[in-house]
Amino acid sequence: MPRTVDHEQRRTQIADAAVRLAGREGLHAVSMRAVAAEAGISLHLVQYYFGTKAELIHAGLRHLERQSNERWAARLAALPQPVSARAYLEAFFEEALPTDDVSRTFHLVGASYAVLAMTDPDLADLPFVAGLSHLEKHLDDALRRGQADGSLPAGLDPAHQASVLVALNHGIGTTVMIGQRTAEEARTVLQRHLAALFDGGTPHASGHDSPAD
Amino acid sequence: MPRTVDHEQRRTQIADAAVRLAGREGLHAVSMRAVAAEAGISLHLVQYYFGTKAELIHAGLRHLERQSNERWAARLAALPQPVSARAYLEAFFEEALPTDDVSRTFHLVGASYAVLAMTDPDLADLPFVAGLSHLEKHLDDALRRGQADGSLPAGLDPAHQASVLVALNHGIGTTVMIGQRTAEEARTVLQRHLAALFDGGTPHASGHDSPAD
DNA sequence: TCCTTTGCAGTACAGTTGTACTGTGTACGG
DNA sequence: CCGTACACAGTACAACTGTACTGCAAAGGA
Image 1 (cartoon, each protein chain N blue to C red):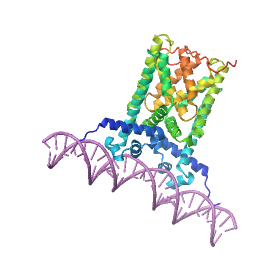
Image 2 (tube, rainbow over the protein chains, first blue to last red):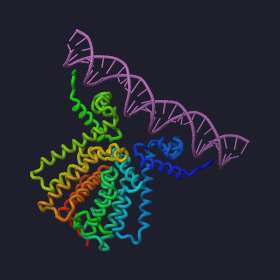
Image 3 (cartoon, rainbow over the protein chains, first blue to last red):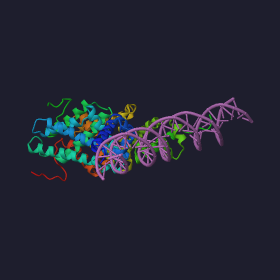
């Protein structure tokens, strides 16, 4: 074999450029040429490593999900062990809220892919949907742990609440992204929701009192 | 004045075609030519009534919002009067869930516009964001009415719960659109959330769930 | 009557897109 | 030493995009 190059590394580099571009200018701005420019390589190389645009988009999605997983794992690892259910859920919201550039990118690209998945059925069976279900399962587990150690009421249904949490997180994140509310306001909404859960669900939350934590 | 045509009607006809197209094939498939074909007119006419594409997109958004308002009003009018808070909120979820073609279109186009608004700041100040806030205000009012007539606990914060409801609705709708869960499953989640609200917020696991103590 | 304005058609144009093509240096196997 | 497989460059091409252009029938005011 002649001159050999780490294909996987090259692909990662290009996929990273694609995601970066999508996060900065939107997924509609992701063209083969734009990705090439972003990665500082020639158009041909993008073709060379991802024969078609669809494959590039797919790879971008996988790359994004991997990035997100790593970030999430790092955040969890930074928490005092063992991680309580509440700390776990708060870390989830904190990670998912579009507060900084990385999470904004994640939300924007995630939403773009979601829209794409609505019309392109090929994208629907991709890790995208699976990733969401996986996430819901994790929250489900965390809620069960909370019930096990008594910090969460035994009465609530973990699966149902996990669904609500994921949907609520996505919905609130969207409102932040389009500028309807600030990330700070969104954080308050999420934390009050969490507080209500852990407080036995009694909607004590009168006024704009923020949950003491 | 020579031959005169109702401009507003023409514009509505074209905007309707644009929304129909966006709902069927996604907002990315909305081009001047495609809209012309969908409306059964020439490309020039689209240009004639909407000088630029941006204006067409804007008009499409306004048209969609108007359609949604009409649908919403019709659903409310069909309810037995006076409309209770709970019936109002249930009607909201029922209307917003992507169950039929119309609401699926609404969700898809709405999500597309949301993504657009994330990157294009010109779109952010459009009725899109205002419409969401308006909706939240309506739910807020409904929640307050529920507290006034005693069907809702006085302790909960209507503004906060309204935010949660809107975000939850959007998030759950998205999961349905990408095929993660069925509309039926989503309806169950929403109804259980509502039930918990009206039941004093105690998250008792009503439904098929069996107490596994 | 003419003629100006309106509604519309068709086409042209410059730009961007995804994809396919030809060419080129270079490192290794023979 | 040589040729072949590899990594890459550059370019060509057809399709599509938004926008701008010229042309033209008709309807009402002068």
